[in-house]
Length: 425
Ligand code: PMP
Image (cartoon, rainbow, N blue to C red):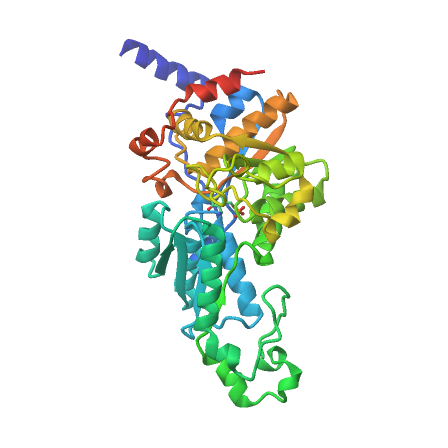
């Protein structure tokens, strides 16, 4: 206690700023935002202290887990819905229903925004996705349909498309057919702009029907350019502003490819020297596409049966086909790192132990890739790598954050893997 008294005396004398002193928590924004969608985006960039200090460079994570729907996908869902409204494909509060095939994050984002705008949501997902995502969707009032995991991507997307068309059948067969397609943005609010000329003049009844009939809308995050645009217009500019343009590399995984393509393109447009680098989990074909120009998956090449399924405990990134949103980004990507399940798991535990950051599996993959990039480039001082912290660990309790599950799946939980990576040359 004497030494404690001395300590306080000394601190007072020297006016030492210490971590024991209370500091006011700064507000993210001093504005009142407009409803739940006002909470989307403008996420902070957090310095990952453990990794930055160990490497001597800055590893910065975009804290996307702070979005109201809990992931980076809030940005995409909002943009897809708003673009659809601008195209006249959706009218709020008409009982219209949004359909999407997703492993969960996008579904939760769509369900959240749907509620705020008066839409219904049907989410089609593989039946092996972490159970907490299903629970979140049901709590948000979405309808959930589950499909067998085999060839999940195509199956759930096709089913979502089919359901959307079936739901909107009345509209599709109505003489007032839409001229707007889901990819060409036709900014319009009147039926006259939406109805193909061969159907004759627009009547007041046409106008009324378009605005009041329930419609089905297939969001289609894999092919819908609104996904890319959300990142080109949002995530990219935010990172540029937050780093004052001082960024050497952007590291991201890819599920739909929207994040890496849109953010990467924006950063490249501001400074073409920014490296855009892919972090890819085991079993995904993208790594080979970047490294060797050929889209094949190791498992597939070995002739095993899991042809379309990315064989990893990591959820949300890794894919075995080239989506439209990925195609935008391919020419930008200069390097790729393959991240093992063991590395991703190790990183997630390392970050809790050292930083108090409780993150999901794709965030962990991204941060492993940041270390591998720094080591490969020989970066030791001053450089800055920005990556995406897509969602929090709380979305992953039943698999990635379930030690029993990992044990059964033979995936080690060993943070020494990260110490070794950091110590490697
Ligand atoms: N992380 C998580 C948790 C995701 O759900 C997704 C999207 N599937 C991604 C990363 C990848 O983002 P994108 O679809 O933009 O490639």
